[in-house]
Length: 208
Image 1 (tube, helix red, strand yellow):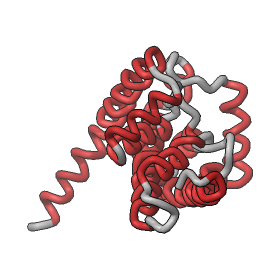
Image 2 (tube, one colour):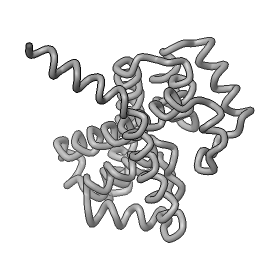
Image 3 (cartoon, one colour):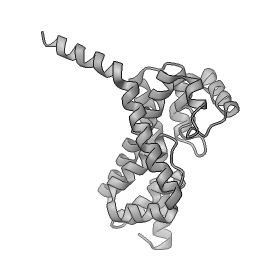
């Protein structure tokens, strides 16, 4: 008997997951466009300084959904470490910054992945907020076809390719749990080495 409510819940989620993902993406888009109009990297740093981890989470959701138009994503975790940590030995805060960054980016990437998976190529290419050309998307499709699921964490762990395999993974109908795991793994590697770099530079420049 207990399995029946669980099955109904799963059916409900599967039925409305596109609407939920589209809603998250739309909310990210509205926030991203607003911030693009009024904000810059300094504004992002002020948000981090004032609202801490909550601001970092929301900004990384935008980054994961490829809607971060007003600040370079590579600067977010270093800024968070510099502004929020009480020195290089504040391991708990550094770990929290990394963890929140991974969670936010993964939520954003999963929303975009779900839209790609459910709505398809033509829908995304027709959206003005999706700023990847058909030619670039075709190239990333080729990467995914060649390397398979391993391309997701590898691309997420590297500069300039972060998130680029999210959409091809959705087009390929990758399993949701597999995508979440691989996406989070790559982002964890990326944000960890960024945080480590921020600590090293911060100590050298005596800002931590």
